[in-house]
Image (cartoon, rainbow, N blue to C red; front, side, top):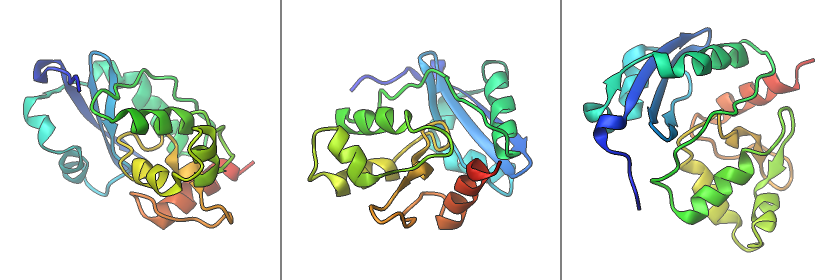
Length: 171
C-alpha cells in the first residue's frame, strides 16, 4: 500500500465552538481529522504518532477550518476537499467513497451501503470499515444508521452522532 512520505505530512489543531479539531494531510489530500475534543492536546493525541513526522502548518487547511467551524455552528457546508485514502484497504476506500456521497441531512443504512457495493452480506464489514473512518464529518459516517433507523456505533459516541444528525436536520 503506498503511503505518503513523512516530510509531506502537515497538521493543524483548530478551535471550534464545539471543541478542538485536529487535521492531518499529505500532498495528496486530507488524511485524518478528529471530532471536536475538549482540549487541543486531546485533538493532537487523537491524530496519533504520525505527528512525529508532520509539520504544524495552518495554510493548507485554512478553508477547511472555516468550513468545519461553520458546520459545527449549524450551517450547511460541503466538504469537496481532496482526500488521501492511500493507507486504507480497497474495501474501506469503496465504503468511504460511497458514504461521502450521502447528502447533507439524509441518512442511509449499513445494508444500503453493502447493497450498493454489490455485497449484500457485508453489512458488518461495512460497519467495521466505517468504524475506521479517518475523516469523520468529511466522510459523514454519522449519516449511516441501522436498518431500522436506530443509531448505532460511532467513533465519537452515540451522543455526538445524534448531535451531528440533529444539526443537519435543523431548518
